[in-house]
Image (cartoon, rainbow over all chains, first blue to last red; front, side, top):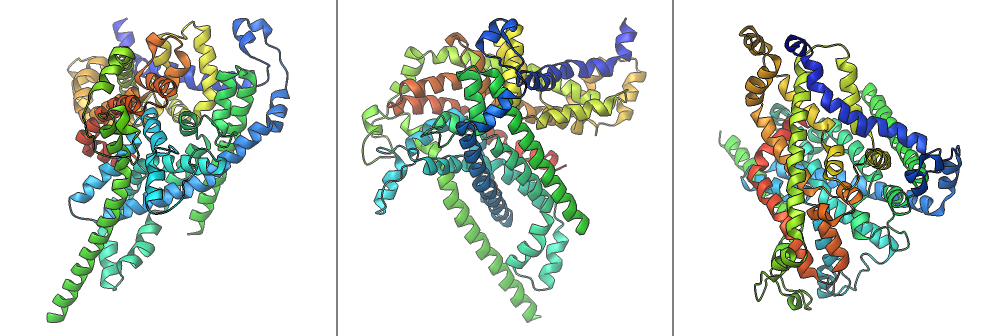
Length: 296
Length: 283
């Protein structure tokens, strides 16, 4: 027995993790696919016999649901504004930190990273106060310099932008670290050669740094885009999708239909629509990246 | 000769002026980044009337611990704290399982290894919204909703951690393991007595990230726990945010209680974490 166990050691090592991953990541995909073709709801949860197979009805209905379409519109809004902002800001901060040699610049890494490790509910508490229309700090500061109040979370489009600002604050840190890591991988000799040729800092950044960071920029863009397509926590804890579904994202739509209205089948269909979109966009980006690297 | 020194000085001066500009830009941005934290921590020590005062003031005029006392005496934050620590403790079991699996993938050549590893990595691409409902249904059919096991089990292991462990452990020399094997040690002893001690740096980093993730865990406990006895700190805080929407002092105290430990821990260990990301993040 003992020598048998020893021989099977690699399988013993990986088995617990694989079982857990299969049970909670791989099997659920199949389950989601199956229930998306049924009318499963709270009644079905109590007794499986109450579940009926209804084919593509959920998909047809969800794609015609004005609330779902609004959620798709909002999600695209988040992606189109959020992704470039995150990439640009984290790249700029990484470049600035990397230019510095003094010790203070190491402290900046921590400052900009801190929001990334903090709890979303705690963040929501503070930002709800900052965005508060009557006693909030932001409106007070705006009034101080003579600007009118901004309806941070009470007007649909402004609310979307407010959530983007909060998410930007929270997500710059991690991406900045990825950029700093990539920056440190660029050989110093390239810059020395450029300096000998008389290139200034701006030329060095645009001619050497940014081209050398192409892979990192691609990596951050793709992960950020996938992240924004699944945008969930900020609207969930800050606005719960309001006002007038103005901040509702596809992920929040799925959550609400699943766990608030208990329409499991309908929510599962919505989640598969999101899944297919994410895969499609990822594949397109990978293909674009491949074509580009073929050319160079 | 003199001309080269002149250009060198000029270059240095230009370099340092760039440093100054970027330093100032970063400092201004940094103030904006830290402002919510300062506001949260200082507000948590203010009495209610000071928080709602217009114009808002940063520094408390009278310091009070009333908000924190209220959380623990009237809001069950002691129960939530214990639950959160239980979740954290379980997540360390998960950390051990990830390390074991990472070793299995790094140092053994067995049938199906590559296929299984790709499968592990593939789980990273699955959006949580797709698995959320099925996982709930699976746990429900196992009778595990509204239990601590149900809260911790789905997030116990993770592909990214397995990947990082595998990366690190594949750098351990195979000769070292062979030598121990020749001395008659079993594979399990090799793991516990050779591999684990060598892997201390990666374990330390993963332990901090695991702690932070467990401490912050919010959505899944919220879905699975109906009983207030099982709430974690963040679920309790979101409850507080709903019930005491106007009482910012209480909310800020709850938020500060959740965030300050993480800030201290992270600031203390940040060098290791950031370096680990730098090494493994881009490979």
